Image 1: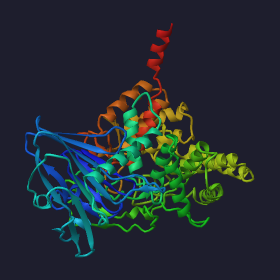
Image 2: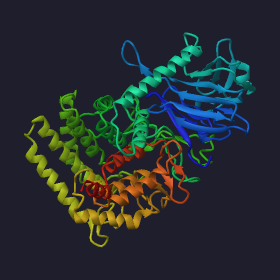
Image 3: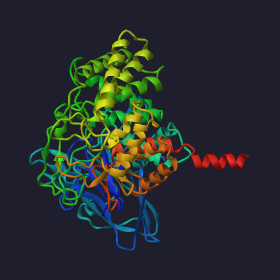
Image 4: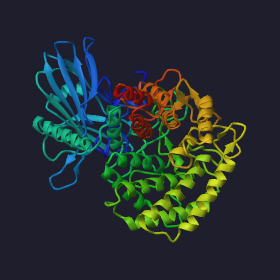
Length: 601
């Protein structure tokens, strides 16, 4: 498999990835950031998986059930047909709240004939450290690992348990199920209860999607991206993950492999802004509560990222016993970037606070906390905006005065002023307006490079950076301003390769990047649209969508030459930008406006 041909299932507690051939190759229980129970994704031979082996006469087709996070993989040789329906249970409980247990169900639906298959059930607990032993008990199959850390996994099924464990041939004549969980069940599952979990979960997702607006164009992509972002949210605290995986490399065979199962303030805030625009208030409320619970003392700076339960220390280590995705080691858990200073997070956080107040002004809780947070953010920006930082791309060596960070410091103050007006708190306005003007003048003076005719990556630099395309999106500059149009054109000339964008081309801590960062291409397409090149933007967007996997999902990166998906998967960044771009381009293009005018005359 030379691409990330996987579907994601989940229930806002954890997630699993299932290949287009029906093999579960990645799953962590009981939470997103727990140790894996299946990790074939990160070690083809030793990681562990749960799949179905059929002979070559079968064709396999995979798709999501419409408007749900339920994945269906169909095996057929013409006469003999069965489907594997995968999901993690999630639905409303009668007494309130959600049922989202740390478990998944693989419901095998008999369709016709006498389909046969062998089950590959090979759990490897605790990231496959040590040896996992699997035993058949009267009610279930249990797998356990007790070398370094004690861990267990329980499988319930109505098939012959010995055939499951031994990988013997199974001839299917009726529906069956596999119910796999972190906890031993108090009540024995059966085929009826498995079907009921499926129906309840399906109804939950259909109801959730019913609250999502529909669009004339790109609606299927927007809907799938919205569900994917929902799957990357952690209900318990409101955190939003950057991705469901760790250590999928930005380039095969290189070392840019990171653990993304954490909550970056920047990424998560951007996700929440998009989701609130789609009308999903609950995910926004939970995230706001997550931020309020995280907020340090009024004079203390936020970290750039936290664990999904609010952990501050995310110690990075390598798992040297795993070979890595396509032998791209190291495999990392934890992320040392938590120690970095990135001044842009305050602007992004203020932007989402402002967005929530505008969208849900009559239904926002914690107004006093938000106002306290707003004042604290402006205080931090006032005292630190002139300092260098690591920037949005988290350069691990050397701080610089990055243009994007400066623009987002300006954004923090700009949105704080708007929040103050909304809340009727105007006593600090004059001082804040002066600070806003000072930062703006500093950026216009130092970020623009006459030689390049563009806003550059950092003060005094000639290097271009795709992140400066967001200057317009955050309201710093008008789309038709000559300097912004010139910047877009310069970035197209220097950073665009076959319709895909480099983040930057200057060498970083690991050399010249050799894959495209997907969100940057979405930013570029948005910028083309904003400066008036609507047809070109639409053409580029359609081309970019064609690089998604078979289910419409994107990872972090795309290889410039082969167009294969690279980096952690599925990536929140990529899908939030897809939604923003699709909504912009779902407006009628100029060409269609002309056609419409002609037809009406």
